[in-house]
Image 1 (spheres, rainbow, N blue to C red):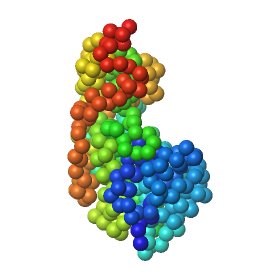
Image 2 (cartoon, rainbow, N blue to C red; image 1 turned 30 degrees about the vertical axis):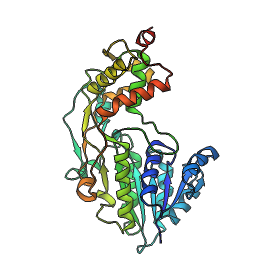
Image 3 (spheres, rainbow, N blue to C red; image 1 turned 90 degrees about the vertical axis):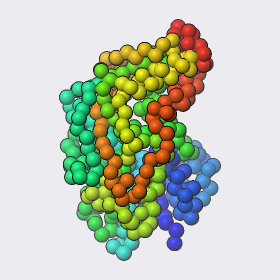
Image 4 (cartoon, rainbow, N blue to C red; image 1 turned 90 degrees about the horizontal axis):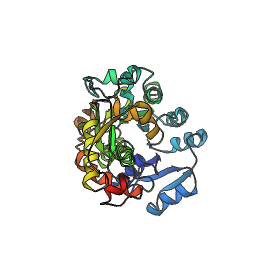
Length: 350
């Protein structure tokens, strides 16, 4: 019997790319996708005629529970902070049998590691603390409750711990994701495109404080391969993957310093004719928040993590271009979104 997958977030950036990767690798899988309305449904149906559309939202607890009962695997790539959805999914998966457990692959994010800088309001400074998902797994799965995404991470972990025979859980924790998505809906990431947009609008590079903050990063296509490998492991009765209390996977292909990325964005925008120079200026927290909500955290709070588990157990190896190599293309895409014309730096500068 082909695997039955219930995917949440199919028209989003992460979920859409995961859908692309999984559907192309395994056309035999029976995939159902949550869609909020007919417009979203049409986006998915236009590319995936075999996909069954489930019209509801994350507050539709009864539908989520029923779909989770019927699915072999639930791949949750939608809102990482929606408690009700995870509770409903967990309840549905708990109805599975020990002979045929249900699998939940939930998407969190390394924003969960920002709490120390956010509490201290130390934005733009370097941090030495690096988390890992192997030797440091107990620390990662017991972070403070004030940490972003922690409330839902705890619910996912609890679902597997409370029903270990019937519910198998894995949390995927991606960092800064870059690259153009391949999904049927949103193909735009957030942190890097927003930095490019704000740079183009301000007409100069921007950074937080001294620009010394670290973040890990991964190309969206490499992230989708990690999802694929976990899905494949689930179809094999768990495979070599870790599930349950230690089933936590950082996904990264190195790390960057945001000040250097800010300079790379400004340099690319200048070379493409959108800025009069590649100057980078430090903005206040208020200015950053006016440009984009949470700007000081996005580019100024540290998130440092190492993806060991996926490499060791799943054989995951990132292959796509680096964030530095992707930056010029991202700048070009954002310039087009803003309606700018190459070579008119003087006009852009006013």
